Image (cartoon, rainbow, N blue to C red):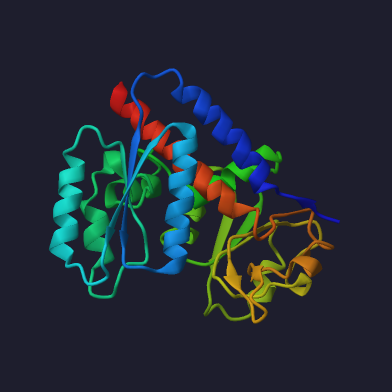
Length: 279
């Protein structure tokens, strides 16, 4: 029976540490989140981020634009925030409406205020092995979770199912830097089970891909990043938890695994950008 990778417990520990760090400063960091439109899931995420930030003593500002806002308005606001010395970190909540080029928006954020680690400079530093200003939140949270449970990364075969710029690609680089052997699969990979069955660590981040015990090697570590509502409106991940728990050595639940760690790392990134700006 697998041991649970408890993201909530670790999140609470990290947030307490961050709160204590911030008590050493007279000034507070300021995290600005730009939200476009009224996507219910995005609004929930943004509200959770705001509440968590405020509990730590981080100023949290949410700027909400209607869904028909033009790209130039967003770019002008980002430029204003880049030049505002009181703003520590900038986050643009994705997804954006189709008429807005998300790359133009992300690329406009100063790398020194890029709390998600998505700008070309930060992504480029990660891919070349140089240290970025911050690491992307979800991959950083996954690595932190593995480290907390003393799970070996070096020398292990890690299979990542998902090739997004938010999770799959940056996580692959971070695992490579820790000397894992990494295979990236995706929704169009043929014979996916043949590959995942060779993995010591399986990370699934595609949203809706069901991974059962027939796709897993006995004793592997399973990290489930996917989250969606099934036909019964139950929140679940990519992995069939009830099956996988009997095969894996460690497994992250959904909810309660990677999600809380993403929020914790967002706060950690905000604090780190603040400290770097203060030095």
